[in-house]
Image (tube, rainbow, N blue to C red):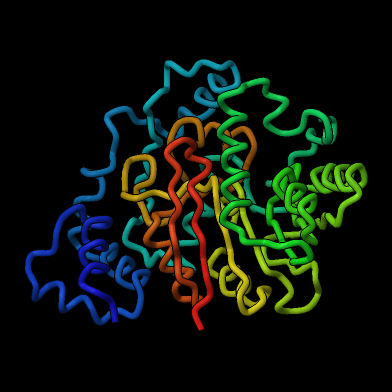
Length: 345
């Protein structure tokens, strides 16, 4: 049974207002989770009728303009589209059950419209083969940018993940979507036994190069979210995602599977993820593609699955899988906002 605070938060996030009275709050407490409450509110007539009015930006982009937007992004022309959001197509049904198959299929149709591609497959559409030509040891990832502000924010995020992890030497760590694996390497240099999983073979080769150079227990694996490199349940003391979970289309399936991979006291950490406090033109639904101009430009160019989540919806998904959430803010770096998920007994 939900708390009154859960119901009030649901009304604020989904409908943009307070519940009418105590009776309305009490009536909605019967839902078993925030996810179910939020889903019910999105199916309401009020939500459907006011959706376009609330979330259609004055500075909007249409699907027909995406090639132009992508070209300007590649040229570095930021001023023209700053503050613009992609308008949802007329066929997008905002009232579909957000945890249902029809909503997922609608998102795949929307992905096809944004990317001008078809038949999404993570192994091909999420690949970044050109990173194989980049330096995996001396100037990987953000170091190659030469941007101290950007690198500083990333390093703060790495530090915050380490700080909140509670990992001791000898414990097992798993990172999904590791990229160059700089945080995974830090855990390994501290004495942890670390596995990484990435869809991109070139990133896995980069992680192996770092593991060989530093002679640490760091082992890359090519695979998708939910893959278990240990081969047995209950192996990991920590699973973490850094700037990667938002590529997980099958999060409803993956989240419960993650618990099976953890030791009884194992935890999940997320940082650098696009998690929103409120609905807005850039993120007007409980989960889906971020509609800001830069994000849709990258999707058009790359074909990536660039999702975002409303915070309370995502926490609700973990709640259903038996996790409690603690949020650790960081005023200095938005990448360093850490969400910690602990298993309930």
